[in-house]
Image 1 (cartoon, rainbow, N blue to C red):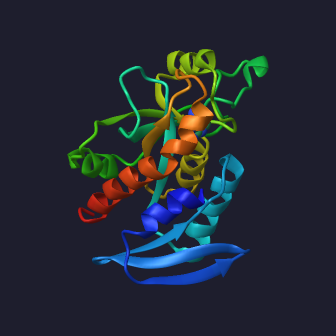
Image 2: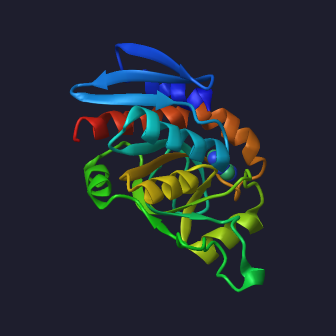
Length: 219
Ligand code: ADE
C-alpha cells in the first residue's frame, strides 16, 4: 500500500523514478546497495505480477517483501516484527482433489525464505519483539477470530497478510532468493481490527522500514 511504501522511501536520499505498465518503480541506493522500490498493490496476483516484472526487467538479485500483517499468535503484538522463514497460502484449496490444504502441485505447501537472508535479519535488534516463523497469505483481510485461529493451527502461522506467499512462489520458480518481513498492524483476535489496521498502518510501516534500513546495512 502507498502508506507502506512511503515509510520505506524515507530510508533513501536520492530516488530515480521509472514507470512500467503504469507502475511506479523507484530506484535508490542505500550505501552500496541499489534498490528498486515498488508498491505492489494488494493481494496475491498484484504481488506476483510485480515480482515477475522486477525479476525480468530489473534483473534483481534478491526480493524483499516488506509491509504490515495481522497477528494470529497470542504472543505477537502490534508493532512486533515477524521475519518469514516459510510462506504458505491459506486460501489455496485442492482438498477435493485429495491434495493437502495449501499444497500447490509442482510447487509445494511451504516455500522457504532464503536462509542467508533470514540469518542476517535475525541479528537485528528493535525496541519491539522480533520473531521468525511461518507467514500465511490469502486474498482476504482476516477479521474473524475463528479464521485466525484456524490458520494458526492448520499452518502453524504467526501472522497473516495478502502477498508474501505469492512473491515466494514466483521467486521459488525463478530461483531468486527472497525474504518477507512484516510488522504487526492488527489482530483478528481483537474487535474491529480493520480500524486498528488503519490506525497502525503508518506506525507499523515505520517500524518495519527501520528494520529494513538496518537489514540493508548488513547485506
Ligand atoms: N494485513 C494486515 N493485517 C491483515 C489482516 N488482518 N488480514 C490480512 N492481511 C493483513
